[in-house]
Length: 336
Ligand SMILES: [Zn+2]
Ligand SMILES: [Zn+2]
Image 1 (tube, rainbow, N blue to C red):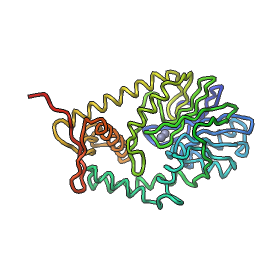
Image 2 (image 1 turned 120 degrees about the vertical axis):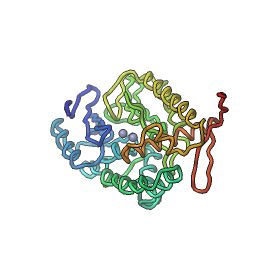
Image 3 (image 1 turned 45 degrees about the vertical axis):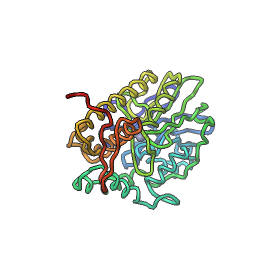
Image 4 (image 1 turned 45 degrees about the horizontal axis):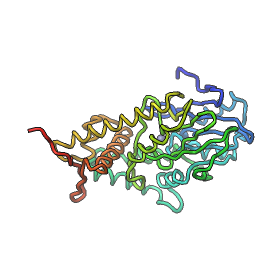
C-alpha cells in the first residue's frame, strides 16, 4: 500500500483494513469519547486484519479493553466481519439497526431465522430462474460459503433505536436508515458540524452495489434512490465513506448517483426493446462474460434491481414460463 494504514482527520481517525479486489480496502473509523473508543465498521475478518488491529491500537496507544462500542453501518462482511472478534477482545457493545441485524441472521445463519445455508440455496435458485447457466451456478456454493470465515464469530447485537440520536465518540449522531445497498443501512450525521459517516450509502468515484437478494427488499433500487434524496438534502461538510477517501461534495455525489441509475435504466430498457431477455442475458450484455463469480454475483443482483424498477415504473414487464423468468419492454418501438 502506498498510503499508510492510519490517517488522522482531526475529528476522527481512519484505519484502512484490507479486503479483496476490486475495493481493496474498507475504512474503519476510530473516535475517542467519554466512555472509551468507538470503532465504526471494523472490517472483514482475516489473519491480516487481526494483525492490523494489533498494530493500529499499538500506534494509537490504546488497548482492546478501552474500546467501549463498535458501531456498524450495515451487515456486509467487509464492515461487520470483525465485530464479533473485536467484541470478544474488548467486551464492547456492538450496535446496528434492527433491519441490518435481521439481514445478518438471514445471510449468515443462526437462531430463529433461516437455518444456516438456506440463504445460499435461495440465492442459487434465484439466479437459476433468472438465466444463469449451470457452469456458473456450480461456482456459487464455494463462493457463498467463503464469506463465513470473514464474519465469525458473530457478535451479540444491541439495536439502535430508529429515529433516536446515538452518542459515540463524544458527538451526538442522527442515524439515517436508507435501503438498496443493504437492508437497514445506517449513516450517522452530526447536525451541528455537518459530519457524516455514510458507510456504503454514498461512495466517491464508485457506485455502491444495489442488491436484490432472497428474503430482502423487493424494490432495492427504489429504496436506494429514495435514500439518495434523503441524504442529499443534508448539509454535509465532510463525508467519511466505507471505501475510498473522505470527501466534501456529498450532495453533488448523491445527484451524480441518481443520474447514473437513470442512465442505466434507460440503457436496459433499450436492450429489452429488441426482444425479451433474462436478467442474466442483460447482465452479460452490459458487463461482459468474463467477470469472476464474485463480480458476476454483484452485477446480476444489480441488474435484477434495475429490471424490477423498470417493471415498477411500467416500462418493462416480467414473464415467468415454467421456471424461467424473462423481462420485456412495454414501450412501443417507433422505428420502422
Ligand atoms: Zn456494503
Ligand atoms: Zn463495503
